[in-house]
Image 1 (cartoon, helix red, strand yellow):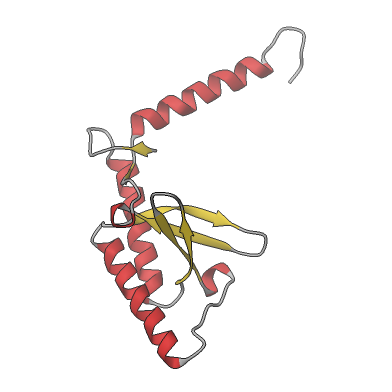
Image 2 (cartoon, rainbow, N blue to C red):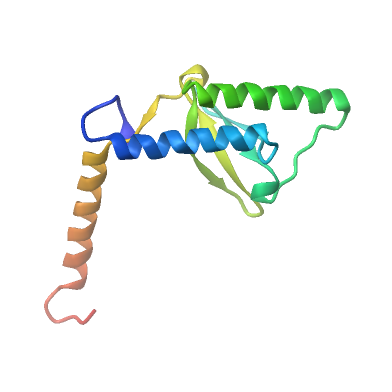
Length: 140
């Protein structure tokens, strides 16, 4: 995957990325995921999502706090559905896994699938791996 726009031959990666966005939105709307933390960088931020499905239960301390968190979850789901933000990837901690979302409204570049670069990467990887293990005088 690279940063970029819509180009020919990218339908499969873009469909996969878009499906992850929609699935994440559904999980937010059904309460299986909730916003649990914010990742800050110098120019952008991302939201970390976790919940019962990832082994982490997040709840507001008061009913009004829970209502505010639920409202943020709905807004985040709408941003995912309207393709304003996207799933950026997982965050794996010592006790939990979470899904990180971000996008242009949060100062993060738009994520797009790009099949030719992905194929080029794996071709280069295979060639390097095979050259490493197919050296004369070694057994693999």
